[in-house]
Length: 505
Picture 1: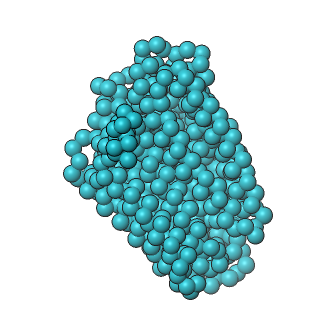
Picture 2: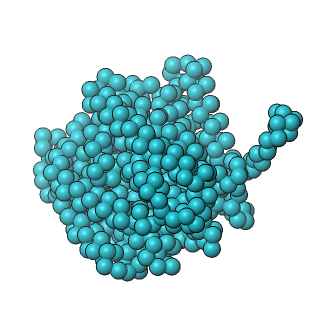
Picture 3: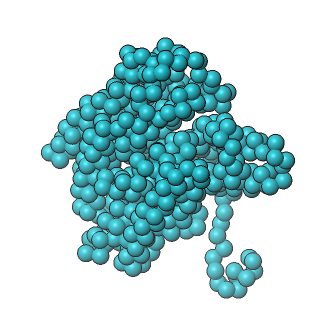
C-alpha cells in the first residue's frame, strides 16, 4: 500500500498511534462486545455490560497519559484531526459519561429482557463518534463523527420495540435528524465551494481575507441550524420531549448529556476555528437562539406532569444557558477566552448533575412503575437517601450555591458581563429571569418529595442494584466536590492556549 501510494504520488498519512489510542481501544472494545454477544452462552451475555464498562475505563488511560506527557497539539491528516488539551478534556468527559450510562443500563436491560450485546455495541459506537468529534478540525471529519454518533442514537431511542412511544421516539428523532443533517451538509458544501477547502483553518483564512458573501452567510446559517437541532435549541427542539419520554431511560440520560454536549463541541470548533471571522453572521443568531431556548424550555417545563418530559424541557433550557457565551464571543479580546472557559465548564458540570438526576429517576421508577411527578410524593418517608440525592441534583441544576451548578451558571454570567455591551447585558438579564423561573418546576418535585404524602400509601423500601448505587455515589460525590472545589473544573475549562493556537495568535 505504501509503494502504491508512492507510485501514484499520494502523501502517506503519518499516524500518531499514541494520540489515536483512545479511539483504537474503543474500536477494539466494540469488536469484543460484539463477539461476546455472538459466541457466549445465553446466560453469560450479561458480561457484555462488564466488558463495555471496563473498556471505557481502559480508554481513559491513554487520555490521561496524553494529557500528562504531551507537549503541544498532535496533528494528523493535514490538520484535519488534532489531539490537544481541548480534545483530551472533552474525550475524558464523554468516556466518563458513557461509563455512568453503562452503570445505569446494566440492571435496566437485564430486568427488561432487552438485547444487550447490540445495545452496548451501539452505545460504544456513539461514544466513539463523540470522541472523534473532539479532535475533528475538518468539515468532512466533523460530519462523519456526527453521523457515527447519531445513527446508533436513532436506533437506541427505539430500543423498546414493543412500546409504541419508543417506536414514535425513534422515528421522530430519525426523520428530523436526517432533515437537520441534510440542511447542515448543504451548508458545508456551500462553504467548500466558496473556500475551496474543508479544513476549518482554511475556511477561517478565507473568511478573514474575503469577508462574508451572500453564499457564505447562507452556508454558516445552514450549518448552525443543523447543529441547533442536535443541541435541541428552540425552534428546533420539537423532537426532544417525545424522544426523551419514549426512549429507554438510560438512553434519555445519554441523549440529554453526551449527545447534546457533542453538538456543542462541534459548534465550538466551528465558531472558534472555522467561522470566527464571520461573527457578524453567527453571533446575533446565537443571541436569538439562546434567549428563545432558555425561555421556551423553562416556560413549557412548568406545565409538565411527567418527570422525564420535565427534564426534557429542563435540558432544552440548560442548552440556552450554554449558548449564552457564544452570543458575545466577538465582544473584545478577552471574550473568546471567557466564552470557551464558560461553555466547557458548564458542559462538564451539567453532565455530572443531570446523569445523577436520571439515576434517581431510574431508582424510583423501580418501585413506583410511574413517570409522573406526583409519584415522587412522600419519597423522603421511605427512601430518604434518594430524596436527599435528588434534592442535591435539582438544587445544582437550579444553580443553588455551593453546588457545582452554581459555578456553571456563574461562569456563564461572568463571560457575558466581562464582554460588556447592551446586548450582553440584556441576555444576562433574560438568563437571570429564567434562572428564577426554573425553580418553579424543580421546586415542584422537591415539594412532592418532602411535603406531600405517598400517593398509594405504599412505603416499601426501594431496592437499589449495585451498579445503580455506584452511579448515584459517583455523580453525587462529583456534584458536591465541584461545588466545594470549583477550581478543579475551572482549570480544565481554561483552555486559553488552545484558543490562541486556533485563532492563529
